[in-house]
Image (tube, rainbow, N blue to C red; front, side, top):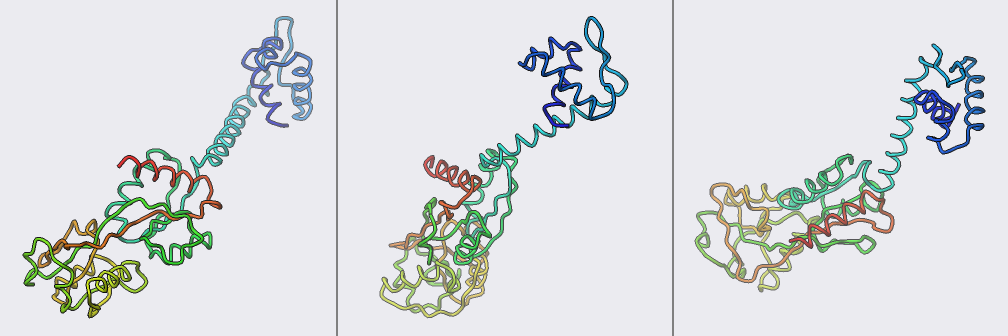
Length: 293
């Protein structure tokens, strides 16, 4: 049996009249009659009793009606799921993000995406920009929220979505703690706590110091901003951290704006030419969110 036969069967069961059933199905009556006879032959059971005014369901027909309707409903669910998958409205989207994205990018984009595409399952994991780029190339991720500029990202499509600036984090006991704005060069003699070398922020901080006329003395490196701030709290040195990531500053740490703050950016990376509809929809939503700012 096939879905067409089940549709004919349930329609006839609803109308109990071949003529009205054929009209509802937008076919002539003979094909409907033939289809029902073939279905009864295949099932080796009579589904309808014919009479001068129409038909009535047999016991076998009554028993078959609900399963037939359920099968048609499941088939429609399959069609709907396929359509939703084709349009990027259903499926699984794998997103890699750098740690600093939790402060602004993720809270801004993920809720908006979930409201727009509630049937999409999100698989989100933190990583570094370099590792995210590698996994995008390997097909292990669909979307990456990364720091810019993206090292070795020549074959990826990147949409800048957020700008920020570096700010100085100093111990509360530092002579610089009370400054309103601080020339970066005044920190030249201080030990620095930098992001690890795999982070774009490591390079940005080094370049900023070089432009200010000195090479920083690196006392410690760390991956996460909260770890860096804890090391500053411990008095191990000063640090340059993204301003957006400093909403929760530990006791003993003061944030000081720089006189000429280095600008940094974050973006969304995909392999747009190879991206499926899920990633394409995420990128389109991010463009909308960015344009609305």
